[in-house]
Image (cartoon, rainbow, N blue to C red):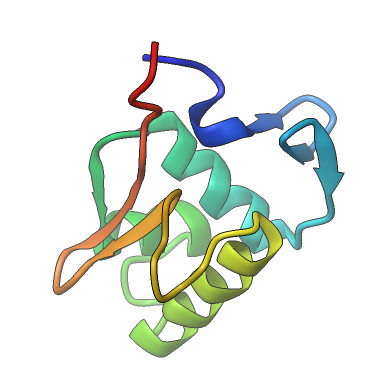
Length: 103
């Protein structure tokens, strides 16, 4: 896998996120969501897993809350919701952070 995926990376120790080398400011939930998705880049991460890992409880985050956080994160990483190239919603399942395809 090419790293960082799609020009996005997180520095867990300093709790910083970067898009194409520029730092972006994320809320705690956005950071946790991005970190989880990057750790599983190329894989679908189910909504229940996101709720457990980001909110600490599978029932803690409503679908609407989760979708709003994903929407805010997309904006901050420069992704277009109508044609996402980084963070894709897999309807009825969860989310996938796309891997780079070029070598």
